[in-house]
Length: 139
Image (cartoon, rainbow, N blue to C red; front, side):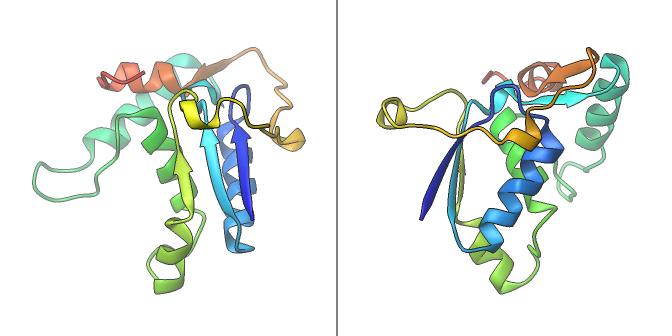
């Protein structure tokens, strides 16, 4: 079964746990509008934390942390599944994440995750802003 989720306005961590659970249950998950997912917290603290994650890797050796919004969301989900096992890698292949909405998915119905849309604070940063801060050209 395939699930299409619109990430606009969703809190990243809560959305990622839902996606990881669906992947572990055997579903194929497609996420669109990854750049519109939000991370709660002070702007400066969030930017500092993600900049430190990105700079941690050395040029030829890891750990590598992505700049693009879709890959940041994918990496967050990867941390919630057993990626280092063969089963975890098979599960991870069932996840597709897009910046924006692809033309072939524009007419399909997309779901919202109720538990991930409850934004209780006005201090948040979108994933698109973080990827722009890290130097990504894709927004």
